[in-house]
Length: 196
Image (cartoon, rainbow, N blue to C red):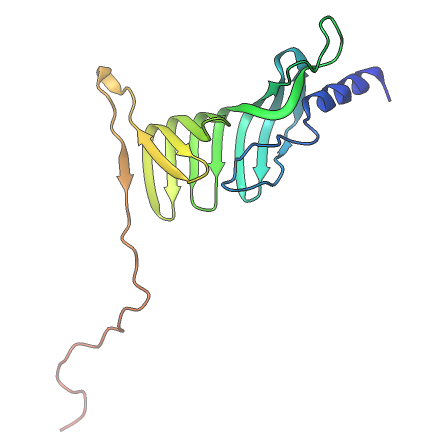
């Protein structure tokens, strides 16, 4: 194994990337690990940061977070590294994630697209910003910012600045639920086709 690969593997182990964030929840009520894939990974131990670039995707259970770039910040472990040492004080507990560019957050209940997103583990929220489009079944909501409480899947869509300094408005299109048990249509009453 070459030195560069060994250094990267050591950095990943120090960050706990291989094990995954222990307390992170992209999926509501899930203890499944988070599986992250991308074209490239860069680890900066001094910042407790793992940056995934190129079609980055984090998957937990049935929930996905996709973006061009995905930055995962880990909480430092107090006293883990010695001052001036070469080790890392980064634990494997997630602090927050930043998704940058072409963001898709997909759960079994809804699909949300935006420009950027931040998942904060402490507040259990996913905040998606930019031109946000949320789809739930056939219903569609648009706005500038959406805040989702991950554990409950509750969401709030917000407006943002619009043209000429006027705020834009949130827009929602809601389709009525179709009834599966509608009675069959009966043909209209009219003259009988039978001969006289």
